[in-house]
Length: 180
Image (tube, rainbow, N blue to C red; front, side):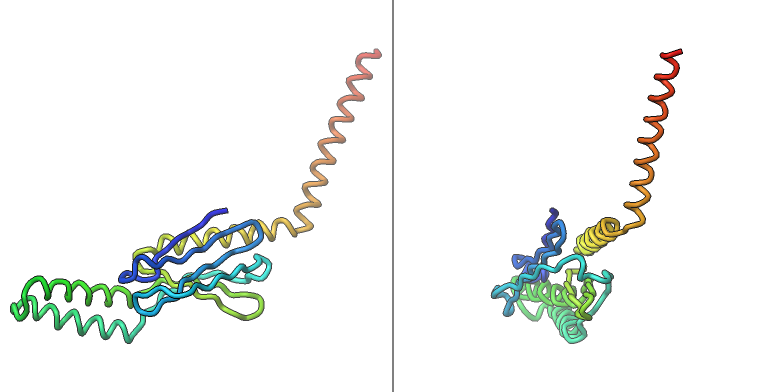
């Protein structure tokens, strides 16, 4: 069982989400928030048999990209022209850059057999965690397919029987050599 913990936002870095890969389930725990205030969380356990497809996508929130770009431009002008004191203008500039960065997302999209899509957003800085979660889920799906694949189990059984037959034949030949 492996757990991947990730940030939901650069600004609200203390609010985390979790993806846990268990034996036959994938658990998603996503915290909801109202601005910077954490609210309740949604907790779902999806059986691996219900997952049909896992993919990584990129997205951008156009509204927040526009707000962040505009604020960054205005705050940069304020910093350059010394319109406000340094201790006010620099934090505003950093906040506007954080809003701009938050508009870029790496998303883990999981299609279910019911047609529902679960989208888990990751901050662009944590794209490696999104890739790791996709690898773990795909590995779980692959193991499940191997467990239910009759051909693999039949081939394994034939190979085991062949080895046992070879051992029995070798034992009989060994007895024949001892009796001679």
